[in-house]
Image 1 (cartoon, rainbow, N blue to C red):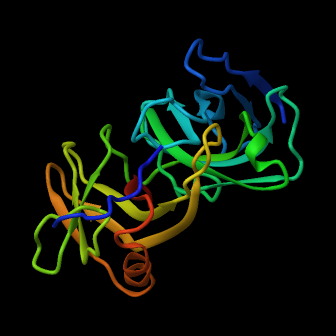
Image 2: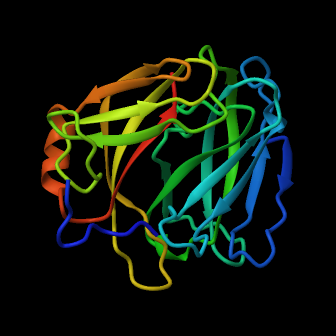
Length: 247
């Protein structure tokens, strides 16, 4: 669970079910890969694992781990069904994502990457797992790096400050040896009672698609709706600044 700021902060064809991970509290993700000809090559090369709550402090809840076995970056278009602890479909629950794997916006590199899920509707707190369907998958025109691009909040003078403060820009750092393109999400989290997973209550894009050079950095300024969101949530709720591969 991501903590809030302190009071003072200073400057269907093929069906397969993944096995549960023992002794971690992780949910099971049932993967459904549908072949639909062109534009859905190698969909069975993707597998998924849902983690509701890792049990560790300062970690994000409701994550979807995406494992890509292909030696190239891909753009999946996914759809989801929420399941309860008995693997029954929760028909009143809508599942959406922060990084856009359900909209064809997330680039998944070879290996493991993440999206973050949001649940809404009747039964949203009863979700124990998700069933994932690969609707389409294409090769990414811009490969994703193996390491996440990191973010750092900056004030109006370019000084590093915490994400809880009223920042004016975000510094992106790419440690990989290839240029990548990312988008930034400013996420505001709820503060649920014990036993309920934390989820996003507000997601605002900062800037647009941004290219970050190999072993380099890029600066994205906070303007418009993003500036309003940052001003409204500064020194208040739990927030994150997350960069994700996109195109």
